[in-house]
Length: 126
Image (cartoon, rainbow, N blue to C red; front, side, top):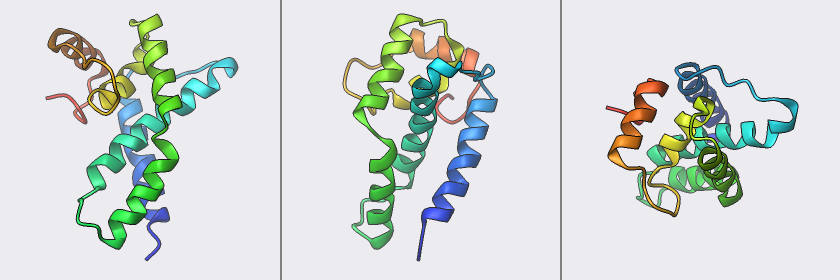
């Protein structure tokens, strides 16, 4: 079975849900690499939840698709942009999704609560 269509459809829905719940995610022409990194973070988070770890053909397809969007460069770009401007609400859903998936210290409880209050996303917030 070809899961690409399913992943693409699910990913678009997940991405639009996660980004629509946050502040408007308008990125300038110069910020397109950051926009892509934010979108990729949502897909990376989605695929992490799809992986069952049973070594099945489905897991192999999920892993293949995940490798396409879960790049260290994109994750570093999001986190670097957040550290540079921690008030940029466009980044909050991606930062929350990447928390625990990327190397580096996790968000503090207070910082996570602040981001969750602003992002209003149930994907990674209680």
